[in-house]
Length: 112
Length: 116
Image (cartoon, rainbow over all chains, first blue to last red; front, side):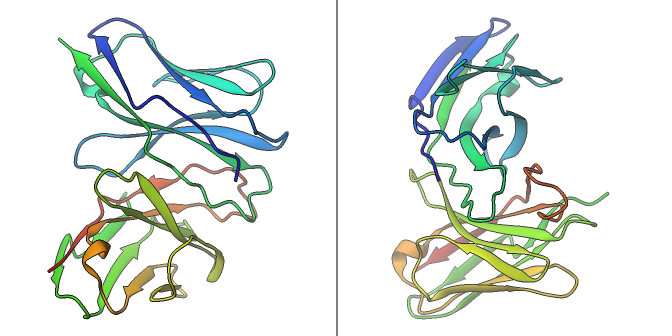
């Protein structure tokens, strides 16, 4: 599976936008970009995914670079409940050999 | 509707013993994934079952094994437990892979395995 790299941690202020970066320079044409987050003492939960175009849902927005070698998860107004570990992963469209490796993710802290 | 359920919540074993962890997927989901989350190491992929078949396996020794039953529930077995097997074991489910490419995963709350 293509690898993703994320910073270890980020801090944000409550009610301000947060931009969480992810680099995936070896992404292939059929890899989808997925984001999950893991709140304390819980299993991960799905946030958003996309292929080429930017995507929006009720939780967040996903901005994908034109060359697809990087992407950014955008939380429009951070709340204290958004403090979590955010994982950026790649999944091949065919997916038959996908191991869905999550890695360590980026730990987001939100200041009141 | 019930989410992904895992049992037991906590499990304490001694080195050399065997551990069996169980996972019930969301109703209608036929794909089950197992992950290990050791302290500070992120989620490590263990196994993926889809419609009763093992689809893929992570870089873990053979003493980590599992199976998926006809009702799509799954078991993870860890033989000859070692101290470093202490971790949170997470199970996730999704719709059948062949019909739903790139379907989102739904995770359970995990089983905390402690090996003494």
